[in-house]
Image 1: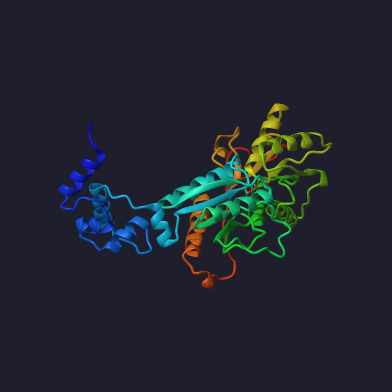
Image 2 (image 1 turned 120 degrees about the vertical axis):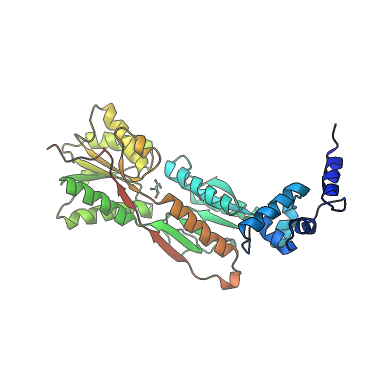
Length: 357
Ligand code: RIB
């Protein structure tokens, strides 16, 4: 049986290094670089290292079996390489896809993600923030749960926070989101261009500011064309499949139907499609349906869903960059909350068509 300590001693001995614990200096000597360069490679910064040099350092680390001590490293640098991500509901494919993109972007920068669900509950959100602070994460990406009563904002948690998708109740260093009104206006423009005049909304819970803004943006866009929906065509539901199913029941109970429905998100749209299908109603012949998000499922819905696409990868990259900048900025130099609004686009598939009546 091979004694690992002996095997390691042999490898170190062959490399011309004194036998004992391999140090950062040993790696530097073998790679022909400075000890600082080894640190930049191991810590993924703060200075960048040329790819060829980086590869030499990594090869030396592999050759010598060097393992930087993560705890000692975090004590020295005060960085743990951990980031928190708090989402309202990871079963919503919008948040699942956004989390996937954030994790990919974080891994490229040498960070790991700790995922928490708030369940749209501010008390759970605060408990997660406190737990993440105690874990000494380097920062938190937060998709806030309750977003309406947002004045005045409570102060942060002593850790850098960047909010995504919605404005938070607590103060964040930066917010990355898309424009809810602009997305709804794109959906309405598309339906009006197809010839629809009777357009309704299956919108998300109005206690969430972005749900309210999506509805307001849609109604304002209709008004621009001299149109307005009947009050019973404004159906409030949860941002999930069951919410969409419920919207189908509400819609079919009306005495007068719209010819098209703008949904607050794709989960509502997919639930609505299922509810209509169960009642024997064909889309887009009877109703045209537009979603919001372009979740990975949207293209596989029956029929494939026309929707407003959110820029997942760009949102993830921008939020992560902002968070890492905040994490490296001394608290005395932190500037007030800033905001970035990214564009959305219409993706036309087969759930929309000209009205048949
Ligand atoms: O809260 C759920 C919705 O908000 C998501 O589906 C996405 O549209 C986000 O903005």
